[in-house]
Structure formats: structure tokens, C-alpha cells
Amino acid sequence: MSLPYKIVVGLEVHVQLLTNTKLFCGCSTKFGSPPNSQVCPVCIGMPGTLPVMNRKAFDLALRAALALNCSIAEFTKWDRKNYYYPDLPKNYQISQYDLPFSYEGFLEINAAADPKKEYTPKRIGLFRAHLEEDAGKNTHDESGRGADSKVDLNRTGTPLLEIVSKPEINSPEEAKAYLEEIRLMLREIGVSDCEMQEGSLRCDANVNIHIEHEGGIAATPLVEVKNLNSITSVGRAIAYEAERQYKEFKKDPVNYRFGNMFKTTAGWNDVKGITVIQRHKENASDYRYFPEPDLVPVVVTPSEVQAAKMAMGELPSEQRKRLQSAPFNLTQYDSQVLTAKGRRMVTYYEEVTAVIGDGKQVINRMSDLVMGALNDRKEEIDQFPLSSQTFADFMKKTASITQQGRRDVFNHMLEKGTDAATSIKELGIQTDFDESKLLQAVLEAIAANGPAVEDYKKGKTAAANRIKGHVMKTAKGAPNDVVQRLLEAELAKLMGT
Image (cartoon, rainbow, N blue to C red):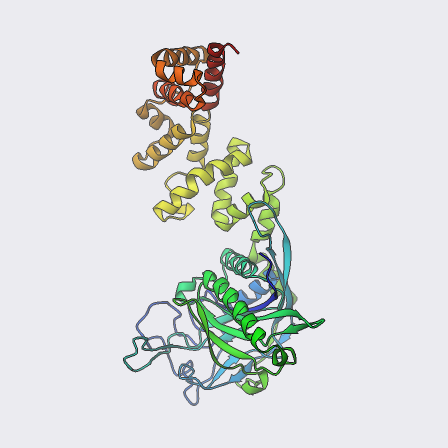
């Protein structure tokens, strides 16, 4: 359904880097520790303390920036972003303002309305990706009984990479595709675990809409929806906020058209599915940025850039292109599904295909059996009890049996820990069928199912399935297509056609 407005979104994604210690001190970044147990004088800003940059955090951020196609600055400095909040004990955050270490990148996403049927590439531009330290966490009483708010400073000083997109995202679906691609890519190159439920990937969505009005384009004021902690929530929040802004515009189009409304910040109530306006949005001048006096600038050398490129390995986008060419020849959708499961799944697929030789057949079997079993067992592919060689052997030995027969063998292998040959034998499945014997089984099934034959003669074609079921039961594991062909031929003879 076409909307009466154009959605315009820019996303600010905050990613916790995969380090053991914080950005400027030696405190642990481990998730789930008791409140305020991972703090020191440096990260809580005690007088006389000095920060020291975590080199691994910078190296990981450099790797991510290159994967995001960003330009790398040879010289970068740190800045203080000044604001007061109870979970920010220093009353400032060390970040980067006018000289970020990377800038002007892009990320390609699939913007198709139906990704299963088509692929529509779209580049989302990036203003910058820069390093900064995290604040702590406030916990408020949501019961309404007026209990005290609590402050946990364990996250204070945790290294974050902030990725700021240009306002080139035009739907909730594009926003979700963008976030899914970032999450996959950063996991695969070892930059972050991107666990949204643990706060290691968070997102702020800057949303407004453009509306054709009186011969021109009216743009609503920007609303920044803060701290969205799931990809689904991001999509829902954008859709709701765009519609809310349109309704407000219809009430007062003059003020909206001439910019007489304030930019605001909003929270997202996931239970009610609504945004809640909180305050006017700050501008850069409100933060009184100035250079951080306690940290030296960072100079990035060409050799460091090259080392970061080497550490990235093959990106998911590169994998997809390779899997769509020989010898695999996967569709765009199949390659998307496979790479979304990670590099280890791609390696498993490649190893099976090297044995079987038919990449399309392998992805079909893996999608039907392996991926479903992994979901059911809540396992990753490197925990899966069937190795790639075992699965390839399974595919070879079950090539001539029915889909249900294959599934029975596969499940038996998982449950009993046996190989394909043993499972086939224990299940009593026949794999080398003589077509003349199958024909005899079809004739016997026709003779044994008189009522079904009579119904078929009366035009009830579905009755053939009862006869076919009899064949499949007596010739367990028989190839479905062969049985179907033989049965249709014999029934045609009965009908005199």
C-alpha cells in the first residue's frame, strides 16, 4: 500500500567492541557481573586519574570502518562531550567530534519488497564511524510505587563504535535489512558479538517524513527515537513515528511546513507500541565539545590499515557474490540465507558441495534438514553431531529414496549417532529399487484397493493417493517420482486412455 508521505530515516548504531577491558582503563567488560563491581578511579572520573587508550579497541574499530567502506583519517583526536546525567560520573563522555578516525562510507542492503523473489541493491551512505566510551545504566521503578532509581556504572567506559548513517533509509524494512547486515558483518569479522539483549548493539533512529503540500515538499521536524534494543523494535518504532508525524502534520500543516516546530527526542514503549516525546533535541553546541586534554591524538599508518584489511577476511557481501557464481551457482536468496548463518555454515556447505558436486541440491537438503535441526537443538553448526563429510555421505546414500525416507534416516542418525548406511539398515529402508519390482508393487496395490480404483474411475482423482500410499508402505523408501509415473500409467490403462 502506497503511503501519502516519504519516510526519511538516519540510524545511529552503537556497537560494543569485543575487548576484555574498557576503552581507557583496565576494568573488565564482562556482561552480567554484580552492579558497580567493574569500576575504578579512571572510568568513574576521580580527580588525578588519566585515561590510556585500549589499542585493541582502536584496531577493531579500524577493521569495522574498512568493512563499512569508510575513508580512514591519518590523524584523529579525542573530544569531550559535556552533559550531565546520573549514569555519567565524569559529567562528560570521551568521544570524537570534528576529526573522527573514519568517514564517508556505505553499506549495501537488499531493499526488495520480497527478498525471496528479487534482489534490489541499495547503498546506504555513512557519515562516519567513530570511537567513544559508553555511559552507565539507570534502572527505574516501573511499578509506579515510587521506589528509588538505581545506577550501575559497570558499562561506564566500555568501548563503543558509533556508526552514523545518512538519512537515506526510506522504510522500516530497509532499516531492518541495514541492521541485520551490520550485525552479520561485525560478527563475522570479529569486531562485536552484537548481542542486542546484552546491550552490545543499540540503535537510535532519527525519523521524519516528507509530504507533498501546496506545490512543494513539507518536511516534519526530526524525532530521535532513543535506545531501541531489537531489530523488530526499530521497524515498529519507525512505522509508528512516521504515521504519528503525518497525523500531527495534518492538524497544523503551516507550522510544520515553515519549520516552526522543535526537533525532539523520544523513547519507545515496546509494550504499547508507541513513541513517547521526552525533550527537545540537543544540538552539537549544547554539548560544548572541546579537545580531550588527557589523550594524545592517534596517527594511523598505511601498514596498520593494511593489517586491518587482512584481519577482516571475506565479508558476507563478498561471500554472497562468490556463492552465486560457479561452482555453486546459488540464487541471491539462497546465498543470503546461507551467509546469514555465518562463515562456519558457509564452510560446511562448501565441504559438502565439494563431495556432491551440485550446490543447489546441497543448499536444498541443508535448508530442509540441517538448518531446521540446528534451530530445534539450539546449536551452532560447529556443535552439530553430523560433520560435513557425514552429511555428504548421507546425501549420496539417500539420493534415490523419498523425502520422508531421507528425513527418517537423518533423524535416526541424530538420535542414535549412527552413519547413513547403519540407519538405512536399521530402519529397513530399501535404496536399490528394481523398476520391474516397483511395477509389481503398483499392480498389487491396485488389486488390493478396489474401492479406491472405483472412486478414481468416477472422477475422484484424489483416490489415487490411497493406492500410492499402499505402494509406499510396502516398498518403503521407494522414489516418489518413479512410483507416481508407474501408477499413473496403470490407472490410465484401466480408464482406457
